[in-house]
Amino acid sequence: QVQLVESGGGLVQAGGSLRLSCAASGRFFLINVMGWYRQAPGKQRELVALITSGGIINYADSVKGRFTISRDNGKNTVYLQMNSLKPEDTAVYYCNALIRTSAYGQPRDYWGQGTQVTVSS
Image (tube, rainbow, N blue to C red; front, side, top):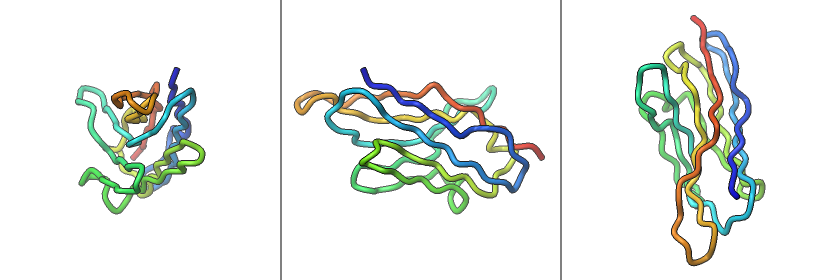
């Protein structure tokens, strides 16, 4: 069974930094894409950043220049370095991965349990 376990959320003042980590565990063949989404109260879940197995990266416009996503394929881990945090970054951050569990199976989405990030003004 595949699991995504996140860590690194917390409370920080505006302008501060946090680093999120997400490690995939279990039995699988290939992790195609890893990324981060967030959901603020009363809002829909939105993409923050994603990175493919080949290193292609995509960021939401709202975080470009402030957040950096990276990936350690050997550790099956994705990171999100968040700098210059703003109160509007406050949300539950979810790790997401598109994983193929066998060589011939279709990839499917997996989600972490979420980690709270709160930025005070």
